[in-house]
Image (cartoon, rainbow, N blue to C red; front, side, top):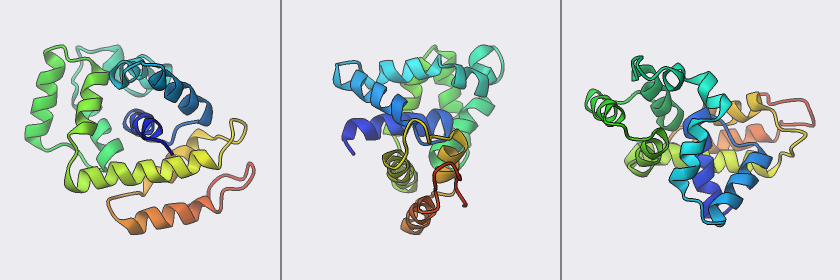
Length: 174
């Protein structure tokens, strides 16, 4: 898949902890290729009904941002932020940094094992999208394909093998 596809897939993983649906991926890749910035797209994701229903913080920003930041880190890196990172991102949110910009910055700043985790999740998510149609897409399957992916190549191999079990309407057997 393309670099544009990888960028959009990272946003889907970061926000929703799932592979993108084929229609959504194609739409957002088209927007990116038409000149919309990845930050503008990420900000659009922050207003999406799925995002708003998943993260109460986005509907009520006076609430604590801890759960939101923990979820984003877990989605991307399979871990909670360390204390210093949590404090930093809470400060950024309190200072008014847009959610989309923050998520792009978190993804862009990934290093070491964190970068490997998100890169591996993108590989598996893109494989899922490549074998899925708009009619066969299931959000639960899209979550399961990335659920056990970590920074190891073994986790990618196992997830790709699990994709072999994805049958027409049968769902994943992971």
